[in-house]
Image (cartoon, rainbow, N blue to C red; front, side, top):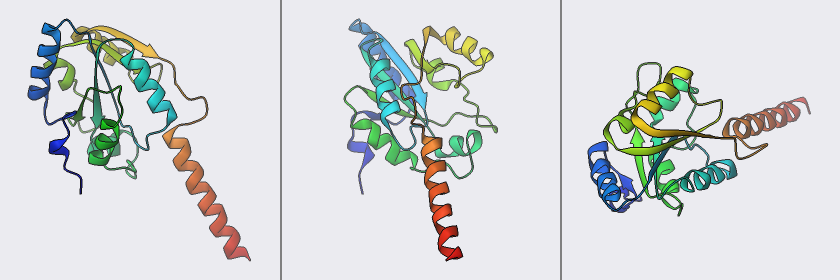
Length: 179
């Protein structure tokens, strides 16, 4: 089994990440941050992460915990466990640091711990689907700038992939039962 402790990109907590971020700031680096579930990593995710990195020098990626995704998306999600999602992201050259996001309320809403504790210059989100107006206001309060990017894949989304696979398997199973 893979040991996440030896992966230098994966940071265990916000306090440790703050030390790295402060060191980068001393060097004059612009720090960019985004968060998401990153379940079933696909081309839209990778295009988005590369576009996020273009906004600054250092890209911090928050990975929603399994518990959080179950609360805000679906009890059957995520498909890929949090440790494996973080490891997959660690292989992406555009990402400098990865941290688990588990500071959530009972409804799965993020409590903004990462951006409250770690100095962030730019927060990047997907336009229209990630945050309410109140959440965007809270993000702007803690980060220098909020940039929203359009979806980076016209036809690919994790939810669509899951639905299509399940639908195809169910249709196939029904057809086999009929014959």
